[in-house]
Length: 314
Image (cartoon, rainbow, N blue to C red; front, top):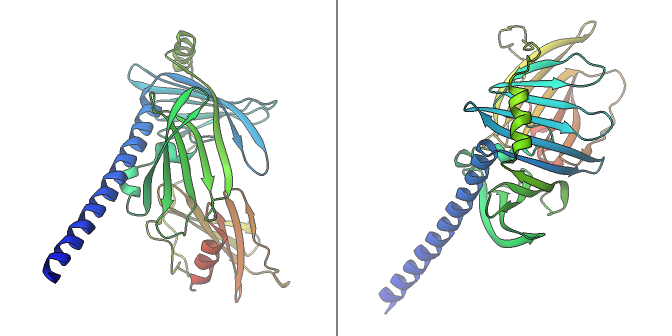
């Protein structure tokens, strides 16, 4: 009897595990469909981004012209900041500043980075959960949750148009499920001749020159980061003079969804008062270690920023 009970429990456990795995796979497929739709469809979206500091309106146009991505992002307020993409070149235009270009695969300014994420790579560190269906206006949506497996990162809830697979709302949440930032689409236009014609005109523009960073060997630091959440990798490091006899050393880390920097300078003469700042997705935390001042800046919960700062060894 005990043998058969063991078999029944084992079969039940395997069935439950299989169901969870299938749900994870289905949610991941929807997220990948969203990324493909965002980079392949011809469309225009008007949206607002809501954060504790501001409400920013924007308009984003995207299409493929001669099989190359062409896109335009306009911040729809009095400043009229504009970003244009042609192929792998992204150009920035802002009143009062010289225009410049950078290499890049897509425009991420004002758009949540989760739209363009590599979800198979992220699956080792995040759970993708199918949370059912809902409606935004008259549009049926699929609800997908992207949850950190170790609570060291922020989380997302995405409402994705069931038909077009374009995102209609994206909420960035902390570990207490409090909303830190919300991306909300106001209107969507697909396959518009007006949008297509405007993108063709953009594809013919001469864009400003590429901003080329000076080539510099990877500097060697006298410190190292002892502990970062799994999946975060160092993507760059730099050193620059900030005042006579003092330098700022910076290492950038990313897990493909969120990023942060570790910044090290000499400590000042005065006693540093710990004043961590958390506003929306941005956290700033400073810690003094002997003669050095360590500052963590990035898209992290405050507890994670403290852990990283405390792990640095000189």
